[in-house]
Image (tube, rainbow, N blue to C red; front, side, top):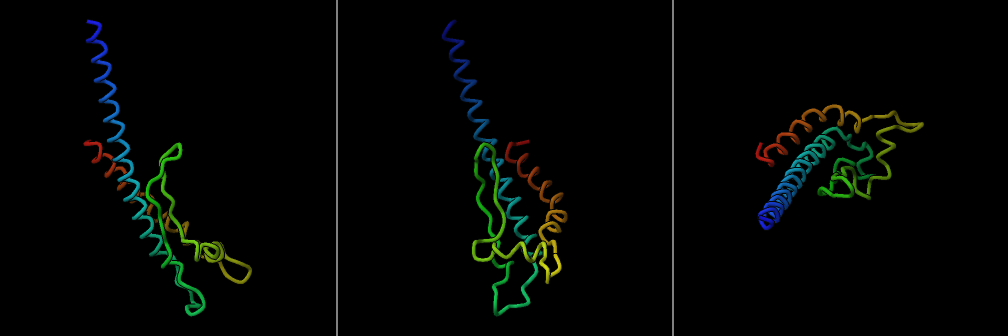
Length: 128
């Protein structure tokens, strides 16, 4: 009988490990879809530079990472190093340029759609 307890504990541990792997896999898939959707929306809303010969367009430099785990799971979405230094001037404005707020507009425009898609992919990944 003592062995039965150990076997049932081992089985419980295996099942919990399977569930954790399934949950992580579903969360990563959901975050990847969400990141891709947000990056597409950001590309749509990012204005093109009127100084086309002088600077590269911001919308051509949007990048996102694969899901990472550092205490919690997350993705980073933004602009690559070539243009990131000037995003704040376009988005929040300068003394000579009005703010365009395309980052905030993207967040407001796509957050509900992206959250619904993330939830759908996550639930499907869990088999619910």
